[in-house]
Length: 528
Length: 108
Image (cartoon, rainbow over the protein chains, first blue to last red):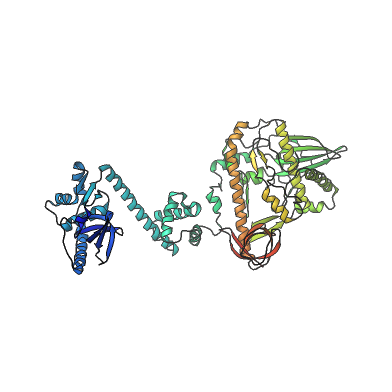
């Protein structure tokens, strides 16, 4: 195209996302020297040209040019809405792929159009973007039927989305003012759910993404701000456990699980397959606030040996693979002891009743019998199913007291400390830090308690380490498939790590990650 | 010995990844919840009170400090003087936000 021929013509150009009328005063290389309706003069690239008048209008008076440009611009803006694009497109789409703007408008009007009509039509066509596309100055491409259908659908969706976004904006504004009652329930439910999803998963869900777009407009897109908004609206509690919601942790039991639990709770313990150990002096040792007792201890001193019995509440006999309770237990993986509540792996009727080794009740147990000679060498290790009856429910504090005066407990302690020493002589990397217990009382008050490792706690910890190690060895030697929980050697070993708190914390940092596997792995507690 | 047949190894292998993931989830929920209430406790009861701290790491003018009585780690930023890992110091709470797990400390 000979650009020089464009000189002294009125033309339509793309300018700041709009189409405006200009006067081409001059040509400078590939750039047009234009007079804009504002009166400003600018050099604009030729590629911004949309269409130009057929004949030049030589003018020298700048004021006259500005007045004319302004006048034409306003007139063309008004004219554009007269045109029905779909009507002309329907005719053209069957016939041609592109058309000169003037020809299209002539076809539509049935007469030779004015320059203003041509410019108005092109403005409308390019703003609408559904039926026509600019192929070159004064030349329109006719968009195919398929593409038009797709564009219409897309526009419809965009429109719906825009509607939804402004609905969301109105809703959130109302929520900030605590005034959402006037909204239909369906809208309330939708936006509350979208805001919740945004707090929990940000933009990972479609509703969360939609909420984000609205929140961004309102400048409150930080999830924490939205959380506070939902707290203020009493949709979330101030202490809402977001992690539970985020990870879909099951906080209640299904009807099926509860039904199965009810049946199990009523089941008799099959006595014929179990060794009766109810004659033993069996105790549980737990914290004062413990409500479910899953292990117990008995001890016998014979003439030539000692016998330790460590009993674990026996669940496996009652829980069948594939049952709802089995699947639910796998999903929960363990009982959650949280400062503000307990989420048991099994319904309370089982975890806190049937399978809890409560004092004075006949209970099914898996017993590990460890026989030792008088020098504490292990003579035998024998796991078997049993029947037990806990004679005393002791607390750590009570056992600490007994350890100062009762030879029975002092002997048990001596035995376990013997095993602890043996572990310490080997490679042993356990780090004992004071436990900090955090509880929320029913009145909402938070209580923080530092729990030191007292002798009774060491005793029970050692009992569990010993029995777990022996049980793992037993399963391994007898080739019984099982799940081993193990921890690889630390990445770095801190010398004198027991010397001070800093060294302990440093060692803790280098401890390997605990893993569960089906193969027997080295453990770092020092017994194997 | 246990008079019961164990779960076959292939069954255990099949359920292990899910179990492992679920166990991690449970541990994560537990530790986040404890931290939340611990920080809330510090916010309600321990603002402006001197707390025993142990310096764990120092980088530029930023130190990670372990609160000895609360088993939680906070940050001291822009402190004056020199801090070294292992130093026992007294700190005060500068900013705490349980929801965002923020615990910013200052030298007391």
